[in-house]
Amino acid sequence: MLINELAKRTGVTVHTIRFYERYGLIRGQRNPDVTSNNYLHYDDECVARLELILDAKSAGFTLQEIGEIIDAWYKDTYTKREKRQILERKIQALDDKIKELRQMKKIIKDCLEEIAS
Amino acid sequence: MLINELAKRTGVTVHTIRFYERYGLIRGQRNPDVTSNNYLHYDDECVARLELILDAKSAGFTLQEIGEIIDAWYKDTYTKREKRQILERKIQALDDKIKELRQMKKIIKDCLEEIAS
DNA sequence: ATCAACCATAGACTATACTCTATGGTTGAT
DNA sequence: ATCAACCATAGAGTATAGTCTATGGTTGAT
Image (cartoon, rainbow over all chains, first blue to last red; front, side):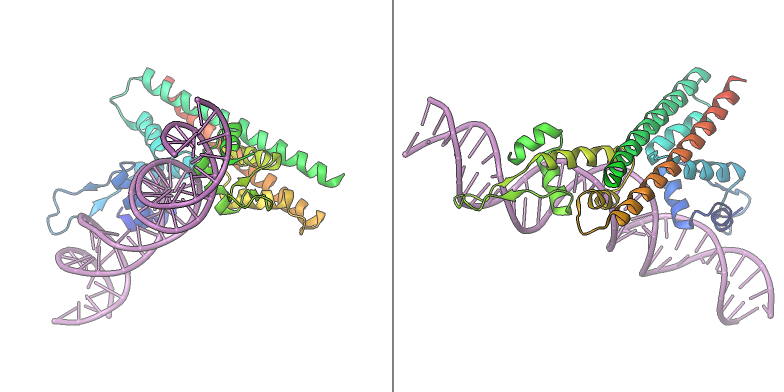
């Protein structure tokens, strides 16, 4: 598919997809048989990557961190051991963040109780 | 206390405190009896506000959102009802975020399982 | 052939949240 | 009196993550 279809499928704008591509999070392929244009083609893996990026961003990861997750996911130069280590660290980061969110929730709840009294 | 002590007590730099003050999140007071300088003085409420800002930032709130929380907390022009409403919305936002974090955790866990197999 | 709708690159612009520099005045210990 | 260590404002600079504009080429339906 071309970039416009990828954008429509994922809800990410064409501009932002290009930005992610420059950043190294996804990569389109040129068809070497076609010389009349230099259009980039995207496959289902690109869709999956963009969906992962969206989820990871919602979870508060930076693009840098998302890049690390994507590398652990797709990059074959990592050993299984290395991949596991990277991803387990990300899970730890998520657990820490959940803890912080719960703490903040408690702070606000305490304030609510103070208001009620 | 002066800004330097506030910085030391909270771990927030003098520069960042001034930035937050310009942003409207905290406010120092000038002593009208002293005319030789224009030093700003900060009290314990400022310490509490900065600690709240740190916690809220860790939870992923923007400064804009933190301003809303602080207003609900300290601003007396809001009714109890209004304060409650604002803070309950923030708790809802935290719950939503926790859900997103758990979802991301599941995604990474699934990936880890795939690697293991 | 033409024209809307697409494709590409390059680079300028924006918002958020700092972070730092420049400049100049004040305080307090020696 | 002097000098390090503070205080203030103003404004420039940085990093992250987009977002938009300019420019020019391609495709496909009419």
